[in-house]
Image (cartoon, rainbow, N blue to C red; front, side):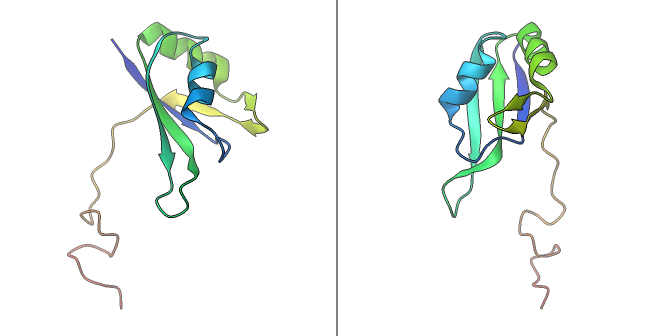
Length: 100
């Protein structure tokens, strides 16, 4: 069964290839999704990776969480399900009203 990982505190110039190379040492990697800023087009400093096996995911967490990589201490853990936003995704305090 595949396991989705959260990988945080990444360098803003990280690529999917960089992450795949780092994670694949611990097990087969199915998918990498580097979260990009819509305005600047650069990485936001975190990503999600799907490891093909639970054992590979656990090995990656144990080996990489807190490890210095490209000058930054990584955060690697099992991804949590996305929470529903109470504002409907609008970001204006709900009900579609402005804060003005």
